[in-house]
Image (cartoon, rainbow, N blue to C red):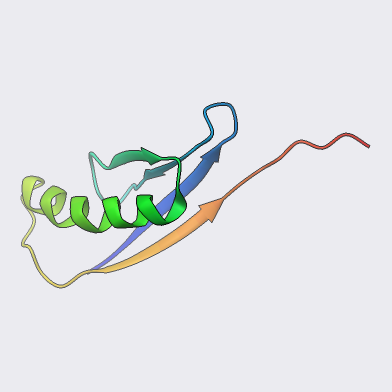
Length: 72
């Protein structure tokens, strides 16, 4: 099974957030991108099982998005 997780930078809070339409209940945040990757790796199998799906080998695709406002 393949799951997509979207990481979005929240400039006001200075944290990365993780969410996924494929994995109900996945909402995590961290000040570090790498730390958030690790948190997602541990949370996803647990959430898959809690959502009533068969725990199996899964592929995670992590996409990141960061927008900044600049003034010229």
